[in-house]
Picture 1 (tube, rainbow, N blue to C red):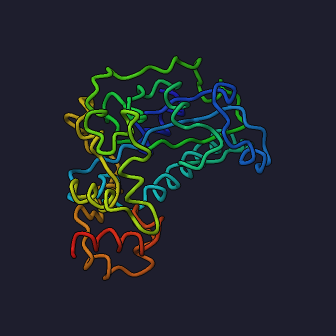
Picture 2: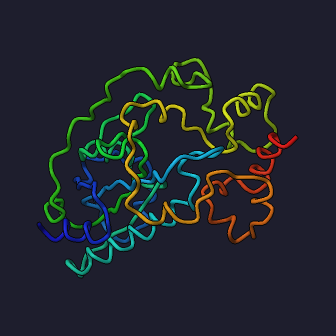
Amino acid sequence: MHWLDALCKEIGIEVYGALSIEDADIINARLLERESFSAKSILVFLVPYYAGETVNLSRYAAARDYHIVLKEITDRLIEGIRRRYPEAHAKGYGDHSPIAERAAALRAGLGVLGDNGLIINEKYGSYVFIGDVITDLSPDALFAKPKKEIRGCMHCGRCKTACPTGILRGEGEDCLSAITQRKGSLTDKEIALMKKHNTVWGCDLCQSVCPYNKDPHVSPFSFFKEDLIPHLTLKILENMSDEVFSERAFAWRGRKTVERNLSLFEE
């Protein structure tokens, strides 16, 4: 076991890999330009989040905002890298990254690409978030391997069949998850879809029917097993302070959006 294996084991990261920056797709060069170092390598990893079933929220949204734990993990990784290489520079990301994170994870061999656009890991299925740390270390220092070809799933078609809006079949303009997160007013058709599938935030239908998610493993991170809200109600929301609300995974579109959605079910 080399030092990076030991560091990831210490943090609880099971699925990870490293790439040369040249093997990644840069989608926001300005983020890299803000840093005071020249990026050379990337450590990319998966954070499983499944902790059980939910009633009216996407499974990821039952816990607090996942960006909180991604920040904690990347901070610990950077700290560990600097223990090994005191002169190293590094920056952690999760979602808002200068690289295409999904493509990087696939090229690092962390999973296959589902027809629903999600990365699917052999153990944790598609119930994973992607994080990355970009450094000025040489790829060899992070034990980077040549990039792998991006592989697809088994193409069984179940996710396309289950998609409520048809976007995965090329028939719709938006997924149901995006509809639930839209600010402002919703159309009668959109409201009907939300009611039909009993969702006030997100949509997991394409994941629920995926064979790779048949027997999902529970996340090894305690973060996703604490402070869970599997069934959100107006009463629960009204009793949340602004501080508590701001840390929920469904908070980023604002309280009014969530209140609107909940009100649809309590009319």
